[in-house]
Length: 542
Ligand code: AMP
Ligand code: ZN
Image 1 (cartoon, rainbow, N blue to C red):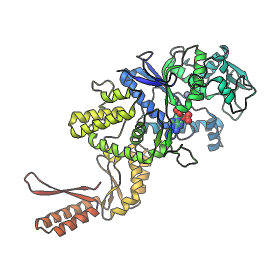
Image 2: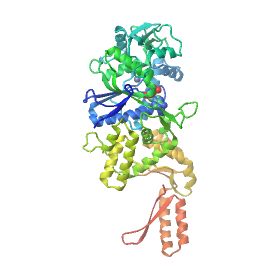
Image 3: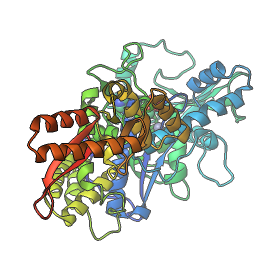
Image 4: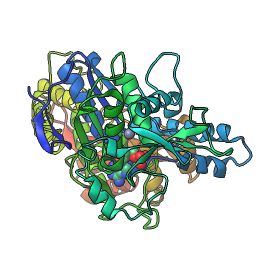
């Protein structure tokens, strides 16, 4: 099967041929860890997770190396550390900020169903030469100076863009245009206004590393050139690798400058063979911004929705298109997953999909192989759902395998996607209404494997309104008003009284009892037993 990917550099969709099929190599720019990641940051993580899964399927799970870095050196981090931990020495404060934020990020993306990348290097560990000899930033910068591509000036080491004749090829910006259009005042120490920082000196209260150019810290772009070479550049760190990805805001200057650094330091014609960029996410039709009040962290959304909902919603739009995040669409994705879960739950989560299985979710893979066409793959998934709904276990297993391939996690628990609140007992209506948001959070907490203390806190909040929380087998949540035993006894008694009323054709009384049970949150199902005798069963209204 041919995998075709759109390449930003050549601006065309091309057949993908790995340099080494036994080790397909992909690098994606990861988060800068100074605060909770927002829902826009989740987009590249999910998109490239789908690509990672696809590559693992096509080339074998052990034949793909996926590197996503963690940027833990950045001026935004320093500011945050000084603000949040003013009493601590800066390095310690920085570590506190970055470790906490990086852990939050890992928990967030795990709840979104993303596999951990093969390597997640942290920038701070790649600044100075390393004991294991993997590429580091200081050595790369030295190489750039030695090869005539970088120079020291005004307390900085700068990349000399003029030294690279085809600088600007990725973004299509010409150096002359940049000069003419440059709005920023030309820094006097730069040979060219487009020259960018590889190293800058640090003041005493900024983090710094001793280097040949004084105590300082790296520029942002060199971090990714070093970390990609460290894990994907082969024994000498100079190899070209297969795929480089990130959001399209990174095309310029970040990726343009990564290319310049890596190619010039290694003397190669390319840094990566395919450049992929996801489109931007906006919220309710507007650019996400704190001032507009439409800024959401992944965590805030995970407090409300199972990660599967966010994942499905994200993949309904083609990765290169802009994506409009709306609450209505989250609701729709949730409803769709609930339907799927009701059909697939007995079959899901049993490792139906494994890249090594004979069985493969072929129609979905084929669609995804066309430049990650997730919207059409979801259309295929819907067709498989329809077949599974009507079909037998083999259709259901096929659907389960496809859902697992997509990275959904909770389809064995339909109750976690159920909408609305169910209760049982006398007078539960008001309590259901009052607890609706909390019950939704509780479902999300279970779905997203929230820590036990969070789950107990939400439960305690609900129970403080005078109900008990009951978790059913398929993770349905029921609010119980009163003792469950007494309620069950009462229901059984009413059901029996209603049967008697029906037997003596007192339909007024039997209807009254039905209404009384409905008010307790109970629905009745009248049927016949094997001998044709009428029987009534009951269940909790959902
Ligand atoms: P940052 O931490 O800002 O460097 O961003 C991390 C990743 O998220 C990069 O790949 C960005 O391109 C991507 N990103 C940031 N904001 C958005 C957005 N609103 N929509 C899609 N991707 C985004
Ligand atoms: Zn990067």
